[in-house]
Image 1 (cartoon, rainbow, N blue to C red):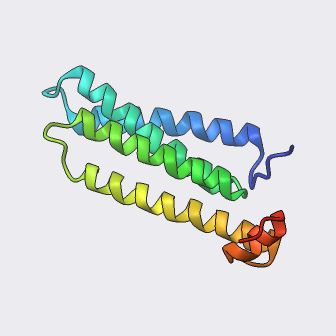
Image 2: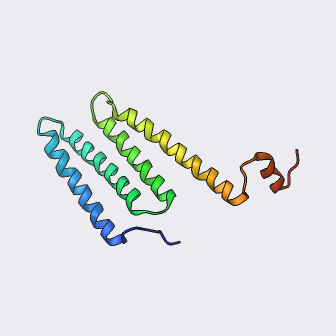
Image 3: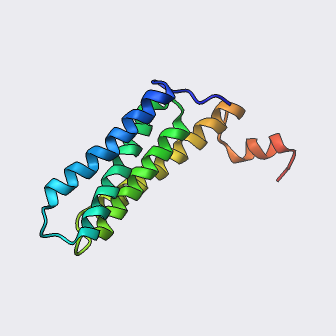
Length: 133
């Protein structure tokens, strides 16, 4: 199968490498030298995962690939929450992203079922399979 992209794979890879470098530079300057070096690297990695998930959502046209981008953004937020002290508001955002992703996945499944069978009625789907109640 071909993956439908907005931009070619080569430029997307270069932008992804640039985003990872940008996240490292931003986090190193934003946290300063007073923070634990391991926490700084964890936050830089979390920011790069969020940015790469956003990049994946932007450059892919397929809805499933965009959902994978949402999920990677959520994982980056959870990683940032574990790297920060006290599990701040990022955990709340992560929960909101999880709920949003669940609704998107359910919506896609319902849309595909309706597109394929022209209904989402369970009795009609049972009749289509050949079962009777």
